Image 1 (cartoon, helix red, strand yellow):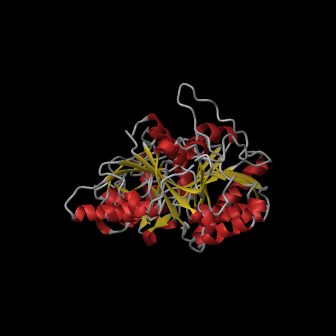
Image 2: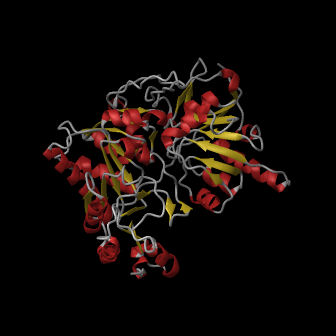
Image 3: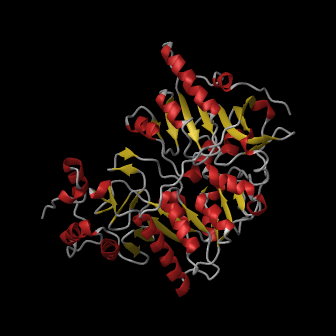
Length: 497
């Protein structure tokens, strides 16, 4: 199959003002790089010529700088969904320049498929290979790329030669049928395959192939500090205690882990704990620690939607494909994040909170309840449906001026009904089977930083004993947040009695 080959600049000019563009990739890897950057340059030229140019942007999750940095700085984005982790795009969202639709990652693919977001004009996806029949082998992620290719009117393929043939066979591409004809996902263990290694492509849709040789260049993780080590140890020790008392099956259960330093540290700590059996993972993002654990025989199998690896770890994987080729599988996020699979497999979910309140509600997205950080991502997909839902956060932020444990979260992403265990560097609060008052006491005692414990005890005592199921004081619930905004330090909060 022969497709038209163009430069990135030529392909970018095929994207028209007002188009809704779907960009493949997930967690900033496997993302097209040349064409989005060229679109940003084209947008700048159009603006300088006095012409309007903005597009709608639909992705699987976070993207790299060629998308969110370049397009945001070019003022080329009208709306964005479902997740981002970029300072420039975040600024544009919080200023109101970009309208942002925060969405569960398990649902964005079906929102596209159902037509909830309107017409998808163009899909841009990265492939590591184009097969003779015109179908494509994706690169280091899947995300919603198969859905974008299926539903878009036109398709642009970035053919990235930097991965060679290493990734062929590592994908399991399955697109669910439309209701009411949808079938069960026949996955009963992380390694079960239900699809194909390639993405079907309608040749009539392909308007350009752009050849590249660009790696993702993922940033490395920060060195572990005392807090991240303590959180990792607390989670590991908690799961070992559950295993020993029979709360977790002796075979252990598959793990899901969110993105970032804490998540990487937690998985590393579990792998180093000899009381934890070698485990498998059914997750969104495959990070560096997983590669190390597979080589050490501590992780048996991992399936996710992206290889969010540094260059060193990716090269390590490619150098040992005899090991990783049979132990790593990439799927669409419609599968990795689907409640059916999460509930059936009994996933232990490990995610990160911005803040949590003393009753167990978690804010994952909004700073002070108003400014978007990144988005909800897949955390609630897993939290709501997991065997055990664990949220982690350092107890302090901004050098101690902010407590991550507060009387009431300023925005709720995962409610107390979905949060089973809360962990900070201070300790663990097991919230299962506990009333609101019991949860509050556990969280304050076990998770709050000593600088804020008395303040939180004072808040709780304001309302306890007044016949309230959830002992809140409405006039004091956000006094800590208000104190930070007015004085720069939550410790200056004054409650009204």
